[in-house]
Length: 171
Image (cartoon, rainbow, N blue to C red):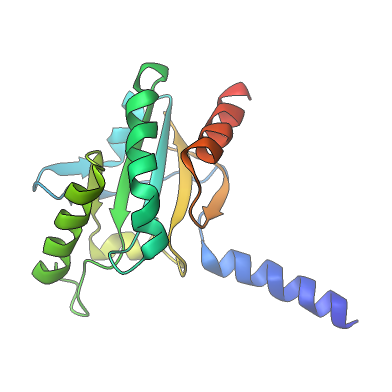
């Protein structure tokens, strides 16, 4: 009986960690770090988009960013793009924290992660980002804006991410 409760608790926890699931349509409107508008239309130009949700406070997030930059560059010809979403950039009033934004800009520059980084708006926390409780969290989205597979919690090496990407593309 105890084992059953443990399994139920783990299943509940995994649902709480990330509310999106395979097949869900991802929709958002936001801006990037340069102030350019970014919408879920970004998915239509790629066969597959890797969405990496990260925090400026997260060591594993920052350590994997150079690998994500290489993945982004080396997979462009395959129609794959990496985008980042900085989850901790809004303050408790839903406004962009200039201090966190500056920290994020430094991290992006220092890691060479020059792919698109999205500044989420408050609405994204009731949609795409609802329930994200661990970073990094990574999802894959197809050209129709649908999530492919489940969310991946934790950081990985370039080699491990490439295996996951290749596996998705084979399906």
